[in-house]
Length: 158
Image 1 (cartoon, rainbow, N blue to C red):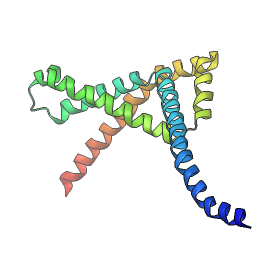
Image 2 (cartoon, rainbow, N blue to C red):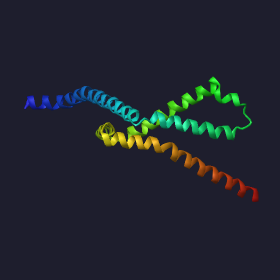
Image 3 (cartoon, one colour):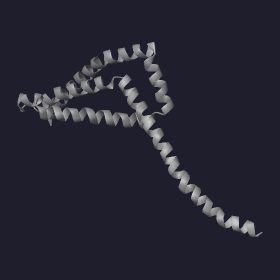
């Protein structure tokens, strides 16, 4: 009976000691999985050639900014300062897109996507997407411009 009481008293202490050892180990395991998953996200994004998409976005932005800021000197668009702004834009897009992929796809799904993009069909799909993306972007930009023009006409009536 004395042994039973002693083990009962030590039970919570042992449990607490185990928690103090196990919980940090679980954290390490989770962070390792998180780092591995982020590596998968970056591999997926690189295979998807999202840097080309980001470049297209920045070109589209610059084109629109030139119209919006038509009063700005033309040298601003080739200045080192504007170049730095656009480099930060690229980094921000890459980082924010990586967070989205990280939170919406599991490691297994990322592995499947990577495997697909490395396959012949995946390479064809990616090539087609990259080929059509500028066309879709220009079409979207043109449609937005038409809406802007119509909205400006409408605003003149008010």
